[in-house]
Image (cartoon, rainbow, N blue to C red; front, side, top):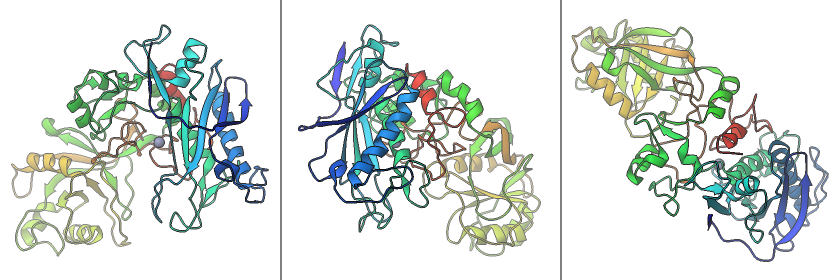
Amino acid sequence: MKSLLTSIGMAAVMLMSSVSWAAATITIVNGDPPGMGFNDPTAVAPVGGNSGTTLGAQRLNAFQAAASKWGATLDSGVTIRVLATWDALPCTETAAVLGSAGALEVFADFTQAPQRNAWFSKAETNKLIGFDADPATPDIRARFNVNLGQPGCFTGSPFYLGLDNNHGPNTDLVTVLLHEFAHGLGFQTYTDDQTGELLAGIPSIWDYFLLDTSTGKVWKDMSNGERATSAVKSGKLVWSGVQVTNAAQVVLRAGTPILTILAPPPVAGVIQVGTAAFGPPLGTPGLTGEVMPVVDTPPDLGLACAPLSAVNALAVRGRIALVDRGQCTFVIKVRNLQDAGAIGVIVVDNVDGAPPPGLGGADPGIHIPAVRVTLEDGLLLKQALARRTRTHSGLFANLGVNLAVRAGTDALGRVLMYAPRPNQPGSSVSHYDTSATPNQLMEPAINADLRHEVRPPYDLTFPLLKDIGW
Ligand SMILES: [Zn+2]
């Protein structure tokens, strides 16, 4: 058996409490010093089913609630130990690290491992071998932001410590804990998502399921460079495990806003879009039409920031207009194109990045649909549009909701993983994509509408853990 400590444990640990349920026992190990974090003596009123009377006690009760949920879901004969502390994590008025967690130690090539040459979290290793592989080390290390709600750190918006998910505008601690504990249980790769470098030369069990559909390779079969490239292929990086793929048919909603290129064959396929806050929402069967670019003619350079010239108006009349982002607002562009007779608009981003963000703005006078595509996808479309007449391109597209594609999957029903460009170290690759609908616990950011659920019919977290051997 190979093992590796992924982080350094803490001294002066005091065992506080354990929660025992049918399937697994999860113990919270309080690593905070006296008077701080879990030991904060500040008196507080009970809230949302949390009967603790000090801040520290309420924090611990929330941890126990999340531990109970995972304990009732998992199956392990070995107690799972979570070493937890409240620390000053990075934080500003508008952005905060709520918490972080990961496996303290990983193991590979033990007899009961379902896959050779793969790292498994300590908690999963213990489950598989039936005893604690390293009793001196807890399984999961969790850190939470002690300053949330204090001046300069989401001022006035602390964690909601109730257990009933009635969090209002605040961040629900139990939800964040369910998310972070999942990482600690194994919902992460130990491979570097920026450099593609394996941990000590061994792939993670995660890397056996992480598939790049543009190359057909899974991560464990790639070079470091191939992994680094793959980590930023938004829309192309999927989870190939059968448990998640099957559960997605139940959990994720049918229908995703998408640009479908119908012809010509070399560019036919689906393209991710960002949807507009103005104009009609995309629907089914959607809008089908021929795509024509706004010609780059001085002085407007094809940006549609002024009423279109006669030549440009002729080109886009009755067509889906393709226009570059820049120089004026989205609603001005779309309004000018609508006035010229366009039936829909594709805005091509002018900076690299993926997935494509939405189009902001408001104009009740706009009645044609508009979307944004990435700079990269836009360049491919422009190449396909290079040969055309003044009124025809031969490039036909549908702008609509594709009911055959679930929100958060690719066209073959495989769940998309978070692979933004540029890379977001620590978030990329080890979360579900943000297009998942309804929102999923393991998206990179915590959404306000999450339930305290980790499995179908609501959530895809536990199916992924089952794919990797839980
Ligand atoms: Zn996360």
